[in-house]
Length: 118
Picture 1 (cartoon, rainbow, N blue to C red):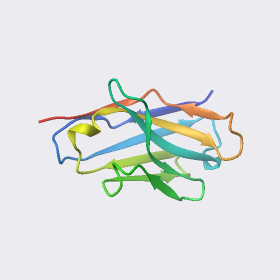
Picture 2: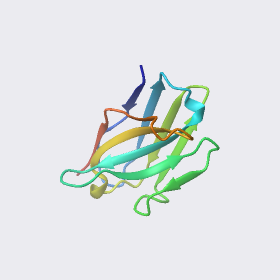
Picture 3: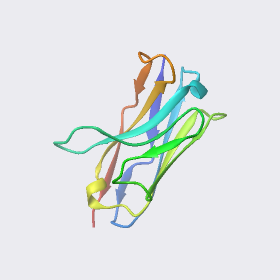
């Protein structure tokens, strides 16, 4: 059974930071591209950061320079360090695992809420 469990969300003031984590089980973690998506109320889900099996990272323009994605293959975890948070970063953040070859092997976590407000 595949599980992706996010943690680390919460309420933070503008300019603040959080570290989101995603613990994966039931997959061979090192063979999956890991990504973080977010979905704000009334908006489509969007990718904010991804990291390939080789450690290559990519970011949405809106978060580049403020968010940093990382992975630890030994611990089957991926993290998203989010700095300089803005109210428009408020959303549910989801962890995603996509097998690097088999497109059908795609899994989602349940999401963690990030709220940026003073």
